[in-house]
Amino acid sequence: MPRDYRDDPDITIEPIPGLPGALPRGETILWQGRPQPLALARASLGLTWVAGYFALLAVWRVGSLAADLGWAGAMPYALPFLGLGLLACGMLYLVAYVQARATVYTITTERVAMRIGAALTLTVNLPLTRIVSADLGPGPGGTGSISLTPAEGSRLSYAVLWPHIRPWRMREPQPTLRCIEGAEKVAALLGDAATARQSRPELSAAAMAAE
Image 1 (tube, rainbow, N blue to C red):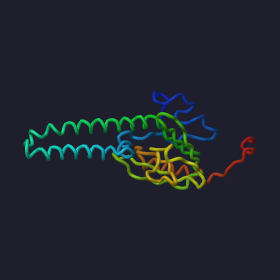
Image 2 (tube, one colour; image 1 turned 180 degrees about the vertical axis):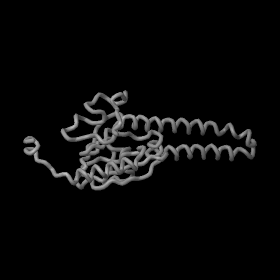
Image 3 (cartoon, one colour; image 1 turned 60 degrees about the vertical axis):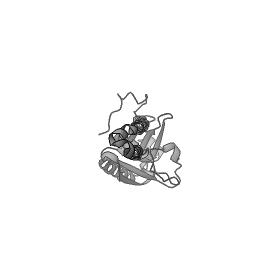
Image 4 (tube, rainbow, N blue to C red; image 1 turned 180 degrees about the horizontal axis):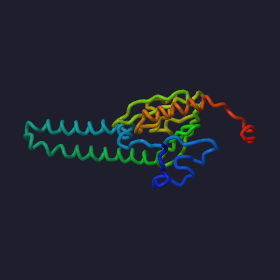
């Protein structure tokens, strides 16, 4: 069941939340979701590494002073490093939270749409017929990410899509539904939708108008 975002105060007024316009006749929303903020901070902003770095600095500082001051006397010297680490991690989480709240991923019977961007909002539409493959990968905290390989000739920008992109694939950017809950079920739903769409014949504009 698609999630209802109509009462979400973080979503601007749109004909359909997460989509730039009304759905064409015959198109149906199958699923909507967004990244899990903490998992996104860990996966795309290195939150775990930053926390570990400052923790390591704190341990090093205490260890270097313990011989002269004793463990009890050296412990307070770890507080500045722990405080800076907490501040840095808090800022990273805030960035991830804002990014996650501004994002809506949508799978319909015709396409995958990604409403992204905290400062400059845009919607990336990927028709199911233009998606070559979808790769499911594990994410932090039990989440998962689904990377989409677009057909050759698709013009996508790594910088514009970040962090909703597969890491380090700069030459051939792969839009990615990052750090979503229930990723396995979503991937199966996407596969079924793509199979159904591929097996459905294209209708010309004249034929559609005649219906």
